[in-house]
Length: 220
Image (tube, rainbow, N blue to C red):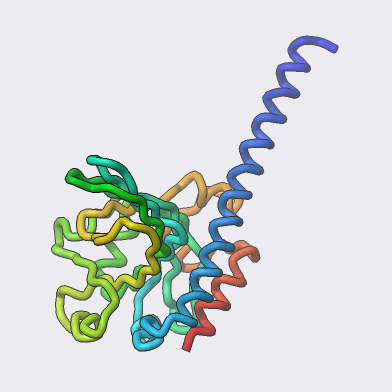
């Protein structure tokens, strides 16, 4: 066999392996996001705010946001954004979320994060290539609590956050966090180049996400 054939075969195998890895990561993330939606239904703290989910413009689910370190702290994770279209939920667009901080920080924390996007301006901001909570238009996030419902009536409630955190690392904060679309994941998952706008309008679809869409629709 010619060396060129061997090289071509190796390149093809590498490309197929990379594509499979992408698909596997995305399918796993969607499955984890579905489990987070199941957890939301069983959490009494969220039950009081389920009406906000029905009124939300969109929802960003980050199944595993990790924050930890010594002296330097950082947090980050991957998630999916789905838009509420009135009849149900759109196809998921893949995103990353991260931020950094400095201080006397010791410990490790892992959390499930659900962001209820309550305003059109917050959704428009998140659809851009890079969005920083609390910057520019003053979009801020409030943590779900007894006061969250009231906060959504004013400009301070563009985003309402539900979180289920574990570990010794307390005080998760979201203002200053950066949210960015993962364009390469979106392309691999849908088998074509797809903008966030096209995904949120469900112009492109993947049957793999039906379980997540159904779980969100079932929350009452």
